[in-house]
Length: 264
Picture 1 (cartoon, rainbow, N blue to C red):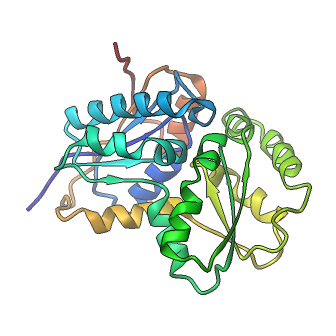
Picture 2: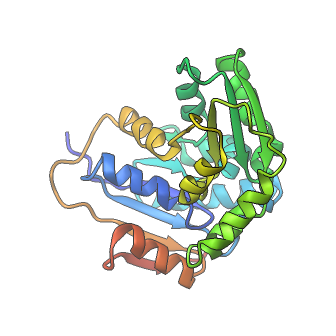
């Protein structure tokens, strides 16, 4: 049976577009409704209560807009608001977060015994990655670091790639990740500087492709897919910024359907 309803994807800014792009690459016939909460970015510096409030409102909006699944393309929201998001989505709309599928994937890999994690302050302080790894594979050692300036630097540095590079070098200067096997980029903005991260790590360290893993999990969860019809992608933001316009066009072409939507 064909289900042409869109997949709802949300983040606080441009980072979630890395996940939306991976979904489009793996499921090219699926329509995507993307919501960027640009009025409240970055989530990584917000309190858990605010993250839960924003995430619940967006999830309700996506469900009311007819989305058949919700992808929480934000590690801060996944780490601090997943229960509220699942409740807002309701029992009939599956929710895919950024943490569980990624940890499940690395737990099944023999080569990931010592894992590095960089993420926002909200993601790291939640402890969810540590907790989930302990549950799925207690033999894995996790070395984590909050990198609170990086997401904002990437938002700005998308136009000038020297800014994220300098911030990354400062965070990696103490060689905290010298002895890891794998690295989790625990923020959906971070794949945009994947090459810069790889260059700062020891040779042979695997940088986990989280957007690809999330897209694969979504494909597994969806039981009804669209046919070969042309997908209808829509992009909504709570504050229409030049950064988001540029990024959406960069990832999905010049004809993106982009609109500003505010909540009362």
